[in-house]
Length: 211
Image (cartoon, rainbow, N blue to C red; front, side, top):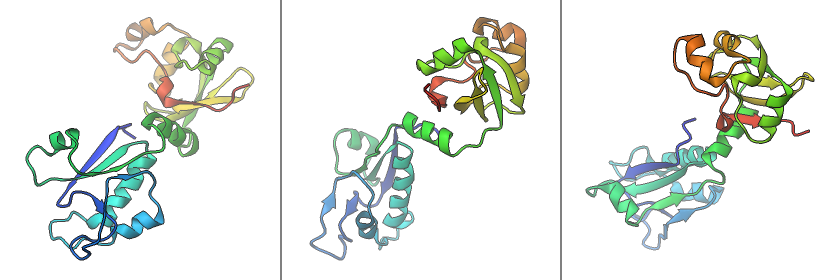
């Protein structure tokens, strides 16, 4: 999950039509797709062009993945010079619109898809900070459980033993144990390298309990 805002697919066609414009003179161009429905998928059909990269059906499949991740996607012609400038200037193309932002989609992915590799325990002050929308800093961590590396998902456990949040760890369990309870400004001297200030950044953290 890169949290990208936009994906551009350059093609030999200028976007999506209601049917193949090479075969149907009544085919209508679609400049924006708010939702990928079965009807939209049916419009894709197959590509009659030898230059097509996998056909329109493959592009629609890519669009479904992109918008599901909160990313806009554009199908535009790649035969012209400076195609990205043409898109910025309003050239004809088809836009697929996401229903959520990349950050929201990432949080949904963290909460519902990823299995925690371990856990960190936090104090009351850290719990209040998380519920207020803050990142998790080492100062509020009181302990770790299990083995995890940077980029792994971890559960965040409050003083009552409840999973209050879940997020992507910025440090391994070993390094977390060395910096827990300490200020972010001490991280470099404790670990010997300059790491991030947060153990879990708020963009990588999902609150599971609000009470």
